[in-house]
Length: 221
Ligand code: ZN
Image (cartoon, rainbow, N blue to C red; front, side, top):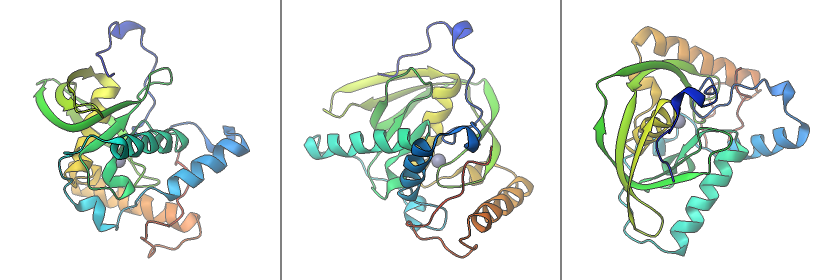
């Protein structure tokens, strides 16, 4: 579960964006695409107030929690994402899942608390399953140490760097109701909102629809 990268020189190239995979849509086979679209429909999009809410600490580590985490992991993978926060599926629990690299297992953090972050920062492009079509450069700490619990309530400490560190910070933001739009300049936000609108229009939804059931466009890259 979420150990640090042991040999940074040998890790595979990070995907270009967090949560939204960089793979061109046309390379996905029909079944993968259908599964991804179905998963994306279950992810709350910008405009849904739950994305702006603060999640509450989990106190019951029961089968229900484990089922919820299981479902989040499956949804994240079906959506071809690298991370997902509970608030994105309308659950106000302090829970996140991530899987930065293809060969990694799905990791889950319950009640994550940032214990330490490096002074070293990195600027990289991120996307968000809740913001179809949006890719923006976001500055984050290069390394983080997070104290959390697993789905049985056991304490765990996770140290990550690079992409997994970025994903964790992105998802922890979600648990506070913070989106990548809040971490960029006003100009970048204006461009992002335009991309979001275009993605929605391209998908035939029109700009006004913000319900959780809305369809999303394909990842922009
Ligand atoms: Zn996100």
